[in-house]
Length: 227
Image (cartoon, rainbow, N blue to C red; front, side, top):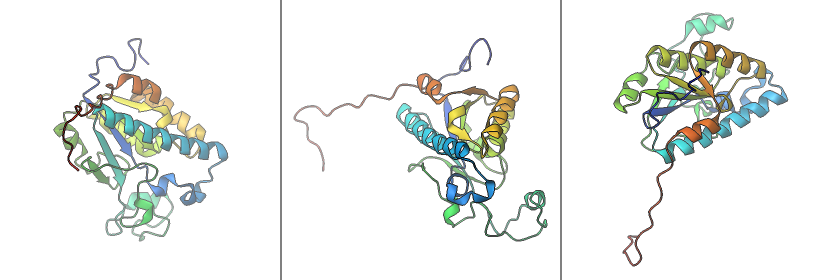
């Protein structure tokens, strides 16, 4: 963190909250048996999902755009390099273990979900910017800096945050609104991201920085209210 602090020079009304991959394939422990999560990792994952949901509520109340980035694995568009990395054949069809396949429950949002009218971007790689119109959508919204939250810290959070930074968006990552399947991996990823890409903050710090929620104006006494 620089001496000026993580929010220096940022207009608190010119950012966006990008929520990445909080989908059943990545967030529901019932889908994660192959990753060998221990109790600490399961608790951290659940806490990160709750915190992300709370940040979404805060951003909406503050009038800060919430942008949803979701993996959409398409059986007709194989990712050969990913197959290769996992020891499969480059042209091998998707198996039952493929995450977030379009039209399956694994692709559903989990513990948090978009509201009507909020921007949603489907991706087929790690970064929300790779092969998508995310940058253009942010520009349309007038966004000049971003918060990146969701799953997982070392993978799609790191890739999305890095691409955002390289596109000249200052990046904030709430340490308690992202997680990995090992606490050590999460902590190591945050350490690297702090060196290269983002200011690491807490959700509490973000809430203090974002605009206050607009007050709810009560209807004048005696005014007509439509049913």
